[in-house]
Length: 307
Image (cartoon, rainbow, N blue to C red; front, side, top):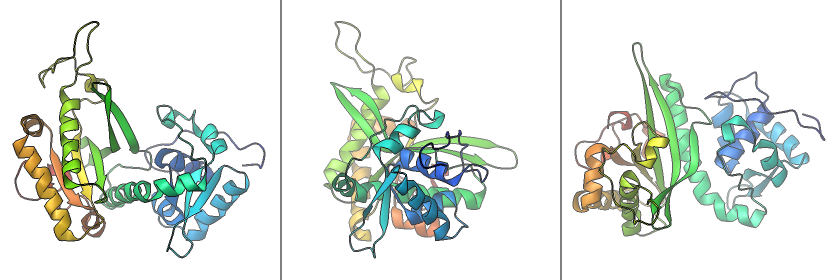
């Protein structure tokens, strides 16, 4: 990459290719995930390389005014990197990102407001990436799309923290899985968190209104549901909790399970769509494919792939 004419970005596969220039991968990763620390980018793109292997291209991109950073508080000067407006323009037409709004971060103040939640969502992704590498499954740096939004009626939209694509590979099978992921840092009330389940139930049954008529709920098996435009089956819904003690987080999971049992629309959703919750620290310590997920409709903890 030259100072005035960066090389064109090349399409990326589900995981980073060594043959693809690392600066290009960094730009794509930041365009996809909005923000990342140097260590997170290292885990995502070059898990076996040194930290310096990421620091050098990041500083190079910074000199070219394609990325900038904010310093995390109380972190020994840890930097969280994000695209500048120029970096966002460079990546917006890449095939892997054509459906992604650019949302460039315009100042370090704006970056600092987004940092805690954005980096926690990426922490969740890295737990799945690390586990997939260990198991030989397919889940790369572009298989996790933050801030996926869908209409749910009455002018309202549901925005999931992330949509995950994941392929389980084995000697005789390949299973393609999708999941909406909600990352809870215990910054909202437990009731507000549980209400997200109602929004997902609305998305599951939502049909847009016809001209001059009010929208009516469609039966779950209906063939005209809008979500079928994007998903062959409705993605499972995973809640990942952190930011408080284990007992507090387990109580929040209990409240999610209570909403599933008590709300008729959520109960109907749970009969067709797997719903589960787990603690982020358990994902990082044990791996997402261990039996750490609590099914919200009841039952013993299990791996998310076996919900």
